[in-house]
Length: 504
Image 1 (cartoon, helix red, strand yellow):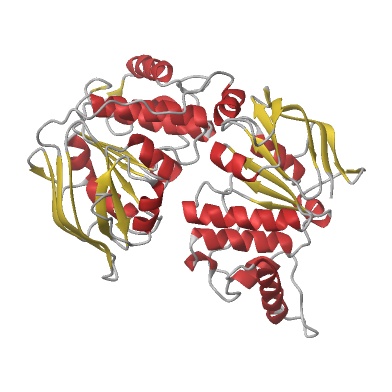
Image 2 (tube, rainbow, N blue to C red):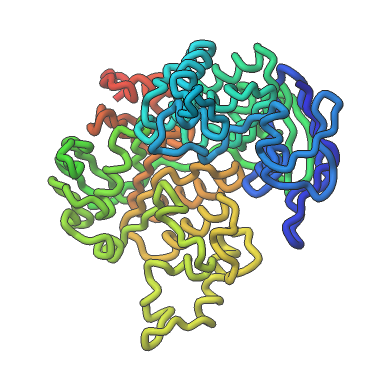
């Protein structure tokens, strides 16, 4: 099916999110829609999917103008969408999620779950998916949940399939699997719109690339275009894609972790005897496939886990058993992996979020009341320093793009006296311009003589930032290797193989 978007314009008050956008996607083509966070990509696809109504322009499928009043109309016309944040009911089974909204019933009026299961198996077999129709969705890994989203779209005979930032929550291995699925779909004639800001993925899968900046199409490119050319189109300026850092200037002391164990409430071991050191002036990156204990390790370091044994010593002070407030007061900066859940209060202003962990400091508060004048002056300085794209300190943090939300978190954590920085997935869901900025600030922190722990599933990020790399597998550390260790060796370690002496 051929898809055409002609002059699509979408406004939210005075904000023009899409400004007369034209887009053509041919049958059997992967068309990448590339742009920074907040560029208008997802808004455009929500118009296509019927979630928003365009203020101007038209949607054309196989030369027929469409009028979608909602997602039901779009699905009926052959459009499917795999959302960045999955639209699945966690307590339902795979089959129940797939049939939701399109329920078949038996002659007695009961839900025909047998038919739904058979349909799931048929689609899964067609594309080589390993999905149990009776599995509870909430129990499935993220990569498998995404397959359920794809099965749900294909079960409704989607001829145009939209993937909205599909790799934002996937491991490298799951990303590779998704690319294979997309190629299968393309080869069978499905038109695919691939929304992303990851240049490596675009060049690997796209047949054609359209770049959007500030709500407008600013250029088209072929997959042969260099990463630097694509990044420049996205951001509107030259972007430095290489992290520049000199050899570490190591100090004494820092962070010492010994035989750390973390148990779940049920007694399962999720961090198993982990030991490592981080010296002042170096970055230790913790790599691994998501779900191998990195999240629990990070939470233990910051004081969020209750069932912890072993030792976490920062500059001579034992942190095990200390509250989160106590850990922060020891000079630990923390960038959580989920900024919306753990890093920000979306209903608070940008200014309020910039002092979340120190609103009672004498610098901002007098007699228990925040000095709004001082806070606004501080916030304006941080907004400028960290290039936070917002209308001002009083804007709600939840209204910012993902990259700018992350900059608020980074700004808050790096503008106080630190003795340790812990950054978990610091650029997850963040565009290339913001990645450049965040990486630079992390390196500056390291060069200021502060020990830095970066937890990341992005191997490119690990390689760019790390002086040493600790790879986790099933709760333990497989090995600690130099920062220039090859991706192949790291990939084997992430599968549980111990490094050779040459690698270590």
